[in-house]
Image (tube, rainbow, N blue to C red):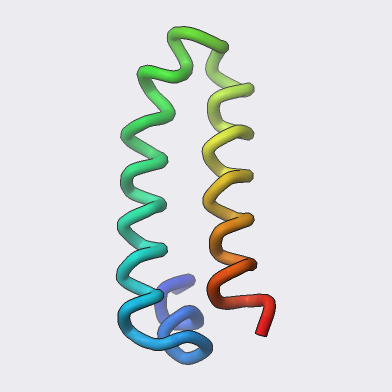
Length: 60
């Protein structure tokens, strides 16, 4: 559902880029969890991509 909102606010390209960022963050959180722990990893990647979402689509 987030991609639909991004597409409406910022266009198809931004929605595709943010969707790819979320998938990459999900994949990257697993190896990161082995280094810093599960919850810190979840908060780090979710916070990072949420900030990107705000900056690219939601801030407007």
